[in-house]
Structures are given as C-alpha cells and as structure tokens.
Amino acid sequence: MIKGEPGPSRPEGAIEPDPSLPRVCVIGAGSSGIAAVKALYEARVPFDCFEMGPVVGGMWVFQNPNGMSGCYSTLEMNTSGPRMAYSDFPMPSYFRDYPMHWQVKEYFDRYIDHFGLRDTISFETEVEHVTRREGGVWEVTISGAVAGGTTETREYDAVVVANGHHWDPRWPDPPFPGSFNGTQMHAHDFRGPDDVNGRRVLVVGVGNSGMDIAVAASYAADASFISARRGVHVIRKRLRGKPIDQMLMPPALPWAVRQKGFELLRRLSGNPAEHGMPAPDHKIGHAHPTVSDEFLDRLRDGAVAPKPNIAELEGDRVKFEDGSTEEIDLIVYATGYRVTFPFFDEELISAPGNDLPLFRRTFHPEVGGAFFIGLAQPLGALMPICEVQSEWIAEYLRGRYHLPEDAELRADMRAERDAHAKRFYRSVRHTMEIDFDEWLAATAKERKRGEKRADRRDHALPIAPRAHDPETDRIGSRPWTSVS
Image 1: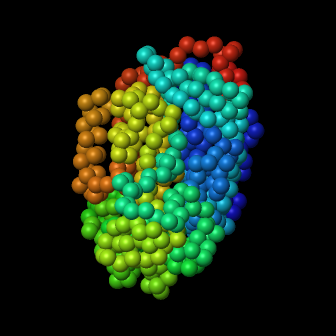
Image 2: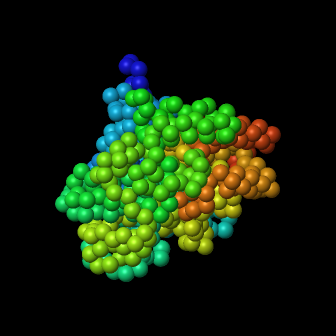
Image 3: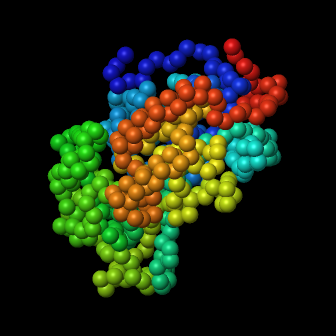
C-alpha cells in the first residue's frame, strides 16, 4: 500500500444494529453527518440518517442539488489534507496540500464507500419538523424519497443534529443606508469568476470567503475592492513550501508560548496594514485568523483595493466612512451565516445571536437526547472534531460514557465560556470558536472521566430505548433485527 493512501475496502457484510440500544435520527450527511453515521454504525446503534440531496458532502459539494452549499468553483481548503482528514482514512497522497473542493467531495465519497455506509443514508429526504414529547420520545417528520413523496413521522430516542452552520446567510443588520442600483448578493450565492467578469466588485467582509472572492474578482473583474470594518490577521497557507498548519507547536504547551509561534507565522506572512488594510485591534489567536496565500500579494500589487466600512449606498456608487466613493456594479456580502435549525420550534432549541451553549460543543445541557456535531468554529480543522464527537456520542448511547452530574456539567460550561471570553473578542462570528488542539486534548480527558463514571454505574444506558416491534420498525428502507 502506498503511504498516505486509504487502505483496502473492508470485507463485505453489513453490521446489523442492536435494537436493545436507543434509536437515533441523524440530520444531514455532510462532513459532520457521515462521521456520525460511521460511529453509530460501528457501535451497532440503530439510526436513520436523512439527507436533503442525492449526495454526501454538504457544503463542500459545488452546486450541491440540496441547494444549501455555498461552494464556489475556485474554492481551496484553508486546512491541509493531513490535518483535516478523519483519523482512520487519510486523504490520497496525490491530493494537493490544500485540497480543492472536488477532491474533498471525492474523499467523502471514498470514505462512505470504503466503510460500507452509503446504503445507511436516506437521500433526497428532508427533515421537516422535530419535536420532543414528554417522556423523551422524539417525533421526526420527514418528506421526500423515503416517505414516498408525502410526509411521514417516525419516533426516536435521540437526535443528532448535523445540518451545518454555513447555509443560512447573515446580511448586514441593520442594512447600510441609501439605495443601490447594481446587484447585491451574499457570498453564499457566489459561484466563481463568471459572476464578477467585467464588473466593478466590492466585497464586504475579510474572512476566508471574503478574501477568496476578492482575489477571484481581481483576475476577472474590472476592479476589485474589499471593505473591512475592522482589521484581521492574515497568515499565508505555506511557508518555505510547507503547509503552516503542520508547523504548529504541541497543544500541551501553554497558550502564551504557542501564541508566540502564531505571531512568528504572522510576521513571516506579511502585514496587510502596510498596504492599506486596518490594523487588527487584537492579538493573533484572539480571533479567527484569515488564511490566504494570494490575498497579500494581490493587495500589495494593487489588484485588490482596500476600503473602510460602508457609510452609504448612493445609487451606482458606494460611499465609505473615510469619505471616499467608488463606482460599483456588484456588492458581495461575505458577512457570515446565522446558526438556525428550521426543523426545531424556537422555544425548544434555537441559537439567538448564533449562541447555543453546549457541553463541549456536543451535548445539550437541558434537552436530553439532543446532540450536535460540527457546531463549532475551530482554529484548525473541523472534520477530526466531528469524528471525536461522533465516537463520543456513540459511547454515551451504549452506556460506555456517562455525563457529569448536572452541577458539575454546568460548572464546566461556565468555566469554558469564561475562558472563551478571555481569549476571543466578542462577536457573532466567535460564539462557537474553539482551539482545535486544546479541544481535542480536553475532550480526551473528559471521555476517560466519563468512562470511569460509566464503570461505577455498570454501564447503564443513559437513554432508555423506547418500546418497539422489530418486525415493523425500519431503519431507512430496510428492516432491522437483532444480531447476537
């Protein structure tokens, strides 16, 4: 086997679910959902996974038929392949250091086929409504292929929410004053250079998508501008030809020491403030940095022109807070996303201001049987975090892990939020921010503590499975039975 290549496919033969365990509904088959599917499947936890579209991969699939993806044709990952891959399935060695979106889609397809997961996912099936009855039973109403083109309601003991958080565009609120004669769009609807060809483009926002779109526009548009309300740190993807996220210090080192490493990377990358961008008002690592190879070069060369925040829209022109104006044809708002759950009633579960407090970004502290995967914004890759969350939830459902007592759990959440507030500046963008390495290390310790709690309780199931009839209950379109 070539080093860095996925291993051979597993032998044929499905792993049958164990009906003595709680039954689970997984919502979504993106990078979070397929990690959940694999963990539950291998733990023999009975589940349904419903995916709106006909393919896996969610936001990483260009022109995904589910209509939820904001992927654009030039999208390159800002995390290197080895760093973002699931632990037991490396990305192919022929992928780019920072894979392109079509390579990530290929990786997801190979992943679910290698582990025999495709038939466990119900495609082209939408979760319309999820509610929780007294006693803890979840009612899930679905429509689409599995429901025969109508609607159907099924019962579950738990729900794993993996619907993603980069699909519901967040626009400037309040809107900028004035009126605009040109085209306004959100970055979620940007598909590539053809959208900006021959136009004078203003990108609002300096996150990864904003800088990517401004760079793309600098090659295809008549003019490319980028508007920044505040400064951000920009780090190049590669230094001396090596991906920068493979040059980080060990997570065991104190943050103050690791921050010096981040600061060195920032200095080696270059300073956007020297080319007209606002200087950041925070130290690196106290907010999500923007990772880009080309932006600093295009900024230095004048191909992307920096502008301050918008003051007013003036027909075919835009006025900025420094008093300058520019003729603009197209405004692209790279202003982030709202965290929403359209299938939940807001009084049950919602995230006002993109804030949903969770125990270690995974367990809902008040609504039993509600788990979340991928609802985090890591300084690092998301997929390995999804993998750990999925395995952790499977352990819990099998009684191999028990949560802390309520008082301890809430004290842990308060401590985590206090530490978050001290490190990251307060904004809607950073409500779910976590440090990749720190989170993985802390979660590994908590899982070991939870295993000891489970041992003391003889591995009792934290969620008692509802009564069911193995002859009539179904998983997806397949009957399921117990296997000894």
